[in-house]
Length: 207
Image (tube, rainbow, N blue to C red; front, side):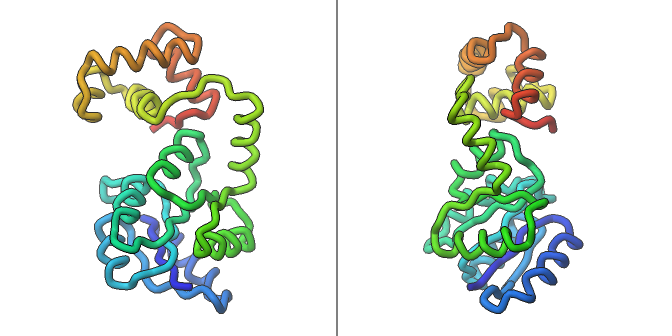
């Protein structure tokens, strides 16, 4: 199968290329450090699977890059490989069209099996992420929407209501409505408490 790597760290890409070189059925056909470079390379190489980091260096993160890749004609599967493990990151990646989600601490064999499974169109989750999601299913707690998570992450970065509205292309009134829902779900009554609770419950990560 043909594999394309997207990671903004050259050393990480070099390590992955070396690691995958021993797998006879996996051919690394290209690599990129950012979204635009990835889109160009993928169009040229037509890989079966893209191995995608979430943090990229050109201002477009791996979630948006995944969304753009999956919007291509006959798109490849996208398998996320990252250090980030919050529910928000997993939710956003899957919502963008990722086939699977692995952590960079996973054993090589888990990575190899994940790439092969993704190529077959199967869903792939790191054992650690899968265990967390199973605990989440058993004890749901507050179910935040993708938009609520986005607002919380912007709050965590220090953005005010006006900035959040501008960034998400919604009105300030809509931001306030979402915050009321977030406060209720998390059992808090301030912005700081909402961010603290969301981080503690691994619903978001700090910037």
